[in-house]
Length: 232
Image (cartoon, rainbow, N blue to C red; front, side, top):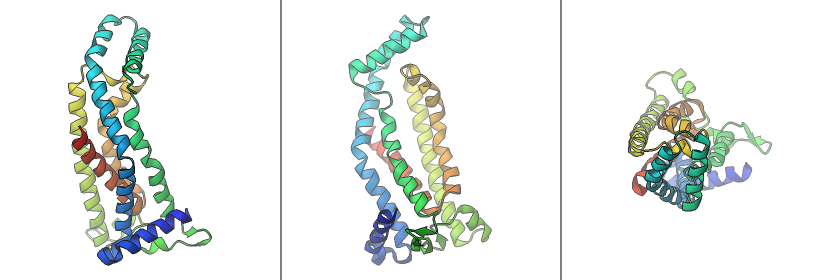
């Protein structure tokens, strides 16, 4: 944790001439971008996998007709088809899963009053007047339409826009697929139905986590939306 804190502090020092009092917030955004850039090869691989899975849909539709009365045989046949094509039905989950460690590091870093038995100096940093270790409830408690509250309103607006964009793309993808994605892995079909709505859960995340972690979430989800649009 202390090593990660030093990394954030060093990035903030680097950005301080440009962002002044909000340098630590800018450092979190830069850190998020660096994490996403490192994971970009996996995102490209996931996009290739998605295109490959889409190309298999006509053959999966044929298997569904052939084994309509034998669901277990259908699942085995679809798994064999994916194996033959060297396509993993879960490959698209990897880029998202790799974001979790960085998110939890930021969450814990800005939730602890001490780091290595010393006061956590990062909690004294703000984005405008919103403390990076604070929460939306704290901003609301300070009065509606204060500077801190406006910071959260901007974050909510960005998340809502990105979530709407992701929802529309996900619905379009489902509409264009002649066979549900859950044929190959039990339960994956249900996930596919819920997935278009998951982006809106980010609004709840931003509301309840420390502002520093919320910045990570907003930056990462925005990056993901742009990345998927470019790679599709």
